[in-house]
Amino acid sequence: MTTARTEAAAVVRRRPKDRKDQIARASAEAFSAFGYHAVGMEDIAARVGISAPALYRHYSSKYELFRGAVLALGQQLVDCTDFVDAEPDDADPAATLDRLVEALIDVTLANRESGGLYRWQARYLHADDQATLSDQLRLANRRIQRPLMAIRPTLTSAQRWMLSAGLLSVIGSIVDHRVQLPAKDIRALLAEAGSAVLNADLPTPADTVSRPASWRIFEADTGVYEALLQASMVLFHAKGYPATSMAEIASAVGIPVSGIYRYFPGKGDILATGLRRAADRVSGRLSAILTGLTEPHQMLTLLIEAYVATSFANPELVAIYYTERVNLPRVDQELLRSVQRSTIDAWMRLLAATRPSLTKTQARFLVHAAVALAVDVGRLVHYDDPADNSAYPQACVRKLMEATVFGRDG
Image (cartoon, rainbow, N blue to C red; front, side):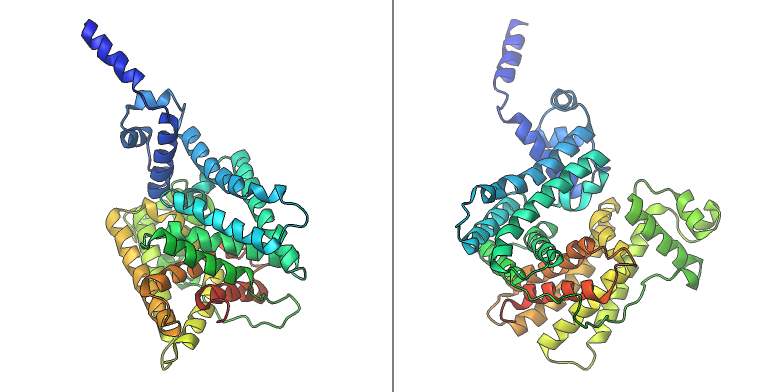
């Protein structure tokens, strides 16, 4: 008995001093990979190598863990940019901006496994915690804008916000994929892409810009099947997949709940079908646009234009791909990734042909970064609000995407 107690006491004494940090990192990576609702305290405890009761000694609930993980990521963005507030008035703004870009890249690389958490799962924060995260992101953006304002004094406030958000998006895009490069190469590539974004010549609202033709992927007036897909995607985007009930979907379409089961076995089948069909339709439409064209730069420019128009016309689908696919069975997730890889590969080949100095892997990184811009900057300019869904914000997003893939001289 004495020996057992001695051994138990030794175990306690050997408990790592950074146990709480280990728990925080493990929970952030788990929530990022599988989503807030799919992760239990037991899952996190297993990752750390402790029991669930031991985990509860550090954190009282799963939400406390989740909240801490998300806000810790936001705080890292604040901390890595706080040197800007101490810069003297005569500091070189270009040098300050370079330091900011370098610091943001370092933080993102350090959190590549968990950074998707604040990007895609923060919707599950309580309102006051969402406000805290918004304040953190707003502060990071304003610090980017401070030297940018000195370098480019003619920018409007809206343009500065698009450029700072674009920079964070391009850098943050590496958490959305697992393409591998040496860290030094990623840093150089993101720094170059970030510089291209910050130097992009955005149109002004007074400029005459065209609004490309777009189409809704699901049309509610073409039958109950399409109406169910369209209503479900809108609800999943607004409320989150776990919080959306079959009754709410049925009510949105105007049919009894039992009517849904004539078309789909369950809610998961609606999500999987909607995302698969959306990916197939977007891929098919983008391919059709290129029929008869052979010049890579022109082809990629047209693809960007069509992708932005489609994203603005179907904002719920673009966001759901990132936020809700974790709720699908692994086989469906892999199928979606295969479709996305095929699309990314097609864009990558065009970019590699346009910029022969890039390797295929570098081109793939830049394509991922450009695609992320349509989502991140699209949300900034409220592409899910028809009143704001105009030609101007689309033109700005196109410019940022073109700057990312073609570079400053493209």
